[in-house]
Image (tube, rainbow, N blue to C red; front, side):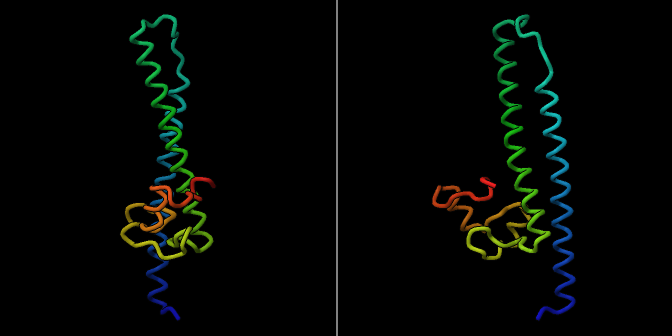
Length: 132
């Protein structure tokens, strides 16, 4: 049975993670909104020379890439917030083991322990979090 002080410490720790996740969620939403606004800025491409058209195309591609990556990370943050609500935050989605405290401090949205994350990176495991 958990002691009341241990439970209080755990609640404080989870509250801290929730704060960080919500702050990161707002930052991602702001960055993505800015990228969308920048991407929608119209430029009369026919008035640009070839070099300017290349720069313009590169900038559009960069904004698209940032938006895609931002969306992926935002999904991970929101899934972590759901795990906080349902009481599974800090448990690896694949093996069910506890995710290390240092890993959670660095990446509070991570759905995997370090061992499973490495397996996902090399392709030995399907990334169920990205598929969600």
